[in-house]
Amino acid sequence: MKIGDLLSELLLSLPEDVFALISRFLSPTDVCNLSLCCKTLRDLVDSEKIWLVQCEVVKVLPLSEIVQWRAGISSYKALCRFLVEVTKPLVGVWVHQNPELGNVVYVMSGFLSVIGCRIIPQEVGSLGIQEGRLLWSPVFEIVSGFDGSARFFLHGIDRESSYLYPGFVTSIDKCCNVLLLEVEPKRREIERRAEKVLFPFCKLPFCDRRKLLYLVTGHVGLPVPELSLKDDKAKSLERRTMLLKSGGNWSHMSLEDELCYDPIQVEINDELWTHLGYGGDFRHVDDEIQVQGTQRKSLSKYFRSGIKSILRRSNSTGSSSSSAKQQASCSSEIRRFNLQKFLSAGDFVGLSVKASKIKLTSYRGWPSMHETHFALYKLPIKIPVEENQEYAGLWGGTFGWPPGKCTEDKPGKALFLLMLTYEKSQDGSERLLVGTKILEGTHYVMHPNGSAMFVVKIGSPTSEIFPFDDTTNGEEKYGFECCYTGEGIAKGYGFRYPGYKPGSLFVTSKGLLMFVLKETKTVLTLQRLNLEELLKKGVCVSPLPPCLNFTYLTKSHTNVFASGQRTSS
Image 1 (cartoon, rainbow, N blue to C red):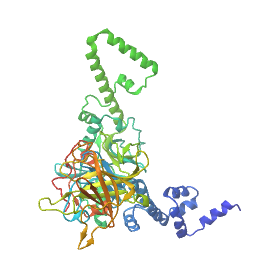
Image 2: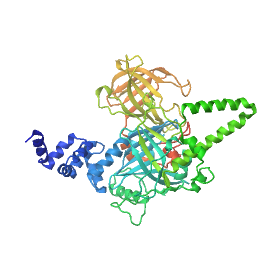
Image 3: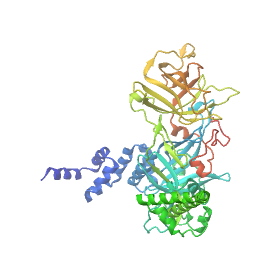
Image 4: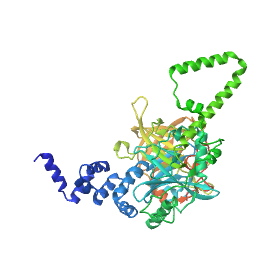
């Protein structure tokens, strides 16, 4: 017998528990590939024990929560599908440039779901960040079906009442860095093969994309079952059932039979076409415009059209205005044709969310963002697993000394969230630690999103002394361990380019970072944050209208999310 056959028999003869232990060294993809080898292996790897191990391998939930989630899903294999395809790619910090105070959405695990929670720009009261109650508002939820598939729900407010807007999950890239809110055309019949969208939503003009999103969210709002981030599994399971039923028929839907799940959509017809600002028959397409919109011109056609254009200009100087009108009319018709191509792929349109990986440029970790896309961008926040990047990650804090001390005339201090990252100096000789601002809780923005609040030379510690008294009854309160010199952002030099002044970063034995500007002695005290724990005990406030709630595209220097509440304690 060949060695390969002996190894195969040995593998197949292993007890299930032993094979489960071996599978810890495999990925879910590897296990799926094994099931394709033969029927015996397929039966072996389809066991609950194997897929329970794989759920642990994904490393997005502790074992206790994995077991709890199993109560609402068909199998550990289905659960692993949701963890791999939805939870792992989406969990993290997502941002947008506007408003300048900060637009931070933290995506965390719910119960058989992921929830996007916006951190409201706010002030920290006398209890401090850890003991205070963080203000947040819901942005979206993606809920697991009984088979591990995903359903999307957008949060929003309409006439002072909160609503949910159900939709589709188009696709989620495992390495996604941008989350897009779009409109998706769909066919009505389940058994009918879906047609390819002839013209992508992202290539439509901004005005058409905005009209479609506002039109759909104006039709599909549903009352919101109360959302809580606290660990009440019974209520969470009941709420999930209501969400899955809300998109379909209440009378005959069950968790075991979710084929009827069908988010409320808007019919594609002449009425929709009129609401979008176009007249006439929706299905009618002008042949000449179709040729202009679909044909690619060859080099000779470009040459001929250029000659004709020159001849037309030489014929009459007074014809320039009429030519401009003709070009504008042609552009409008092509835009109309492209919108028709997009809508012709379905019988109705509904909301959709798509997580993609695109090529993004960035400056000090802050991504360059598209100004006209309803999108959120994922920040590359690293976990400090290596000693040489021990300060990397998400930090929060306030200005002032002593830290956290409030007065009667000023009961709160503005909360600042910073992303700390490492990079090399321009000449490559120095290792730098950069503190990038992603949120500030001031009444009117001091520094734009993505500003570097400080940059320090982390590779060269100094023996500088902290400028304030740190002793209580003769004992050090914080215990400073080391200091690094650098620069901190300054005031008074302009909003976008304020300039920098010398400063120092002090590291304490209690895990705090304190950056001090030398000239003004201004102190920014930072502590590492666990946003998930803070949100679970925080206070939920009302969201914005649905599209604005996902992405606030209007540039603003004030707090548009606060709803009159600003202090977290």
